[in-house]
Image (cartoon, rainbow, N blue to C red):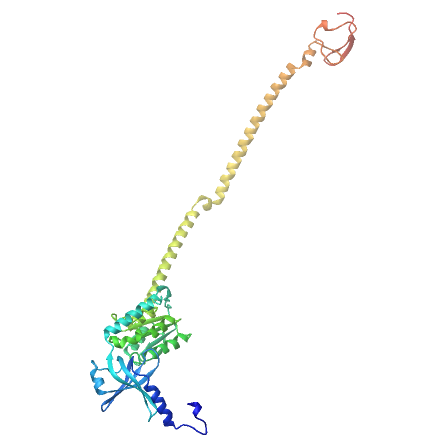
Length: 401
């Protein structure tokens, strides 16, 4: 087309639009799935918008009233449908739309089967594991609240939370909680609150409803957005019997909006009671410990060593004097016995001493070598001998034997 045109030889817009219409007309028919919005009827033609429930993508669809009424139950705004459509391009207006030749509503059974497949998928990926779930802060400074505009769920959460802790603060993100825009708005609100550093915990809540009303909270993109949040998320969707898939990946699941407020915010009365109980318990423990220590101190003070310290010193001094006197007696007696024994030994030595024998008139005859002569036969004439007396000695020469 560009090779046949130039600024000097342009194509009329009708020709270009006709070429586009011919190209689109060759695409044929196709089965598509989406969610109906903006459903209107004009004469015998039905106009609606078919929106992708995951991505922010939509397209205009037209069909005859007969095709619309042939679908039972008849589709309404927010309904999930499967359509057999043919793409058409309107040359006069330069607009694109689908023409539906058959409409089939997606039944509850099919929806439940899809939800079950998605549930198994997120479980297999570990998004529901307990080790991924974070603990809620004890007292959050700011609570992010994702809820419907002026909804009863918003009032329940805020009123019950402030009744439990009046100083609690909220950052409310009012979004659509059902219908074709719910998934996108809730996901965007989660992203904003998760990026806010002041928000310590996020509550996603809405009241009860039918399966179709709660479908946005089982959408795969929203479920993965909740799992990716760094801030702890509390899911409080519907009532106790309702269980959208967001409950599986949220860090805490609350059965109702009121239950969510109780799980996130502590009760000031309960906390004051707990403080009083702990204070009383601490007082009892400390009082018991002081009583035991005082009793031990009194028992120590009553001991004689502390009651009258001087008396104990006197008693010890008496013991020292007695031991010293006993030692003196023992040592004197030992010395006396040793002296007597020494005298006896000296007397025996004197009695047995050779000098004592010499004093009685005896003498000792020795050779010059000091050898004692005991027999006269051992002496030869001319031998020089020494005769020893008690006080002196004399040298003699033997003349005969």
